[in-house]
Structures are given as C-alpha cells and as structure tokens.
Image (cartoon, rainbow, N blue to C red; front, side, top):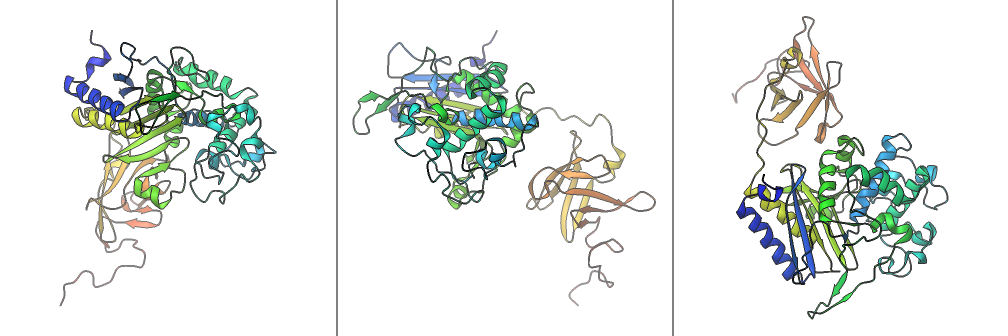
Length: 461
C-alpha cells in the first residue's frame, strides 16, 4: 500500500522540501512545518528545524493567529443558515449596547465596518486579555474611524464583536460553540484555544544577530475570536479541504463559496496587488492563479493556509517566529510547484444523461448587435455564454424552472436569460436583462431595440 506521501513524484517532493528548507534558513525560523493538500487529502508534509533530532510533524501545534477569523466566520454563517440572523442585520438587533450597532454583520465579516484595526491601550497580542475584560475595552472611545461600508479596513476588534455575537445567539462561550459545531464534526482534534502538548514555543529572532528570545503566550480574552487558536498542519489541511468543498454537518458548499467571494471595497493598492477580502477569507492573485485562504500572526508565530481551487491544491505553512519567512509566499510557492509539476487530471468528458430539447433550441451562435457569442450546453446542465472573440462578458446560467436561466457570475450574475418564442414555439431571440440576442447581427424582422435599417447592410458606395 502506498502512503499519501508517496503519491507525489520524487522530483515534486524534493522541490517542495527545497522550498521549505530555503524558507526556514533565509527566514531564520526556529522551525517551519508545511503540508500540501490535493483531492481533499494531505499528499505531502515537510519540516525544517534548528534543533537536531526534534523535527516537528503534522501533529505539533503552532499558534495560527488570524486564521482564527475564518473559523469565527464559519460560526456566523451557520447562524445565518439556521435563520437566526441575516447578514444585513445591524449588530444592534442582536447585540445591543456596543456603541457601533449601526454596522451590519456582513460589514464586520468583510472588514468594512469602519472600525479601528487594533484595540486601544497596550499591544493586545502581547498582554493578558484580562486587561480588556469587555467589548468597550477593545473598542475604545472612538471605535469608528471610517464611514461604515465604504472601504476595506482590517479590524481585529470587529471579529471580537462577531465572537460576542455568536455567544449571544448560542448562549454559550465562543470556544465551546466552536468546538461543538466545527472542530468536532470536522475531526480537528488538535485545534484548541489553549496549547496542548506537543506544541511549539514562540520565539523572537533578533533582526541583526542569530540569537533569539521567547515571546509571551497570552490568553487574548474577548479578542480570542480574532486570533486565539492553536492548530497543526494536519488539522489545517483538513480545514482547507472543508473550505474548498463544504461539509453539510458544518456548512454547505454554497455557503463556503460565499465566504470565498469578494465582499469588501478594495483600495487601489489592493487592486494592484491582487488582494481582496470575502467573509473571513483572503483572496489573492499569485503566479497567475487565484488563491483563497487566510494568513495569521501573533508574537512568536506565523501561519498561512491557502489553496487554488482551479488546481485542486492547497498548502499550509506554520513557523514559530515573530518575523522572518513570509508564510503566504512560501505557501503560494508550494501550490505552484505541485500545480505545475503535476497538473490536475481533468475528469473524463461525459455527455448529458438526457437531452433537453428546449435547451438545445438555444445553443449555437448569437449576436448582441454586432458582437458574436456562442451559447453552449454542458454536461452539468448549465448554459455557458462566451464571446467568440475570446474577450468580453461571459457567464454560466442555471435553469430557473420557468423556461428562463439565471446568470451565475460576472456581469450577468443574477440576470435572467429568457428565450422569446414565436407563436409556433420556435425561438425568435434571447432577452438578457433587456439585451436582445439574435441569430444574425441586427437580424431583419427581429425585435431589435431601435429597429433595423430598412435598406439593410451595404458597402461603402
């Protein structure tokens, strides 16, 4: 029997180990562990450490910092899916008295609530949570520094509010709800609020000398939903598989897809960097591919979970140092190495089980004005509209049950594609959000808005 570790080719495994080794050495990390996920399973893991004979493995805990936010977002989406809240609800409806009740749940999830990035007072990540016993202590006297909903501004206190929202609606501590509703169903037994041996110690490495000192390990108190968790590469690999496909015991595939969808207005610099934020998830563009996941850091620790859904490859990187290796860059490189060396083998083409005559009437070439499009029916039962020039608006459409089709992405997301039929039942043209598509450009006799010139097409003379 071959182990998952042996499923990658030897050259690929060596390239992955080389990347991890370079990251640990150049980043001067006391230790660095990594794992690669493909097809929902860990297919490679590697480690480098400065301590001989004590290499950590996929069961050793590291603090994961803001990857905790993704777990908190999952809890909030569960509340929404159960009908206990709407993402558009103002916070005040469920958690009164915060002083920022006009912000909505989705504003908090997407970091667009206008809240400050950090708490007032001493550095919250490096001091006891007991210094900030209540929400008022993490919000301060001036919690809103930007207009609500207008811009993306990362906020750690915002996720403290979401954790308090979970506690209010569940009537139980955030940590207990997380364990019961997410960690146990997904089998993440090594993901905990407090460290459980074996776990790594957090270190600060001197920027100008090869020496280090331990960082304090504090309980974050009410800020815990923003960055408290400890986990392992093994557990985070399983969590990555969940974030890619969903799990009906925790959150549906549709809801995790919603988490991966951009939800915050991006600044110009973020657009240039290929960065966006969904609901508790970061979206990046690196090496020509879209990556989704989250990074994390706390004094003494760096972490990243990222994945390319198109390549069906994800990576987890954990290190126990305050600064040094860039975890996202390393994780993105691990994804790239596997995706390029061993590209995903597509599933075999298969025809539809049953031909839909009404849908077949719609396929083929169509024209919006003089722009040429092709409409194709695929084996998943969806229609795909694509410009024949290769550039322009495109979308897939699902049937809506009433001879119409609803757009799934891009410009036509949510728009209805409706075939308009003649008295004999044949298709005259397509109506897509008032745009008329005809079989010929400006087809004579067709319902083209503004009409068609009576003299038709002509040459220069």
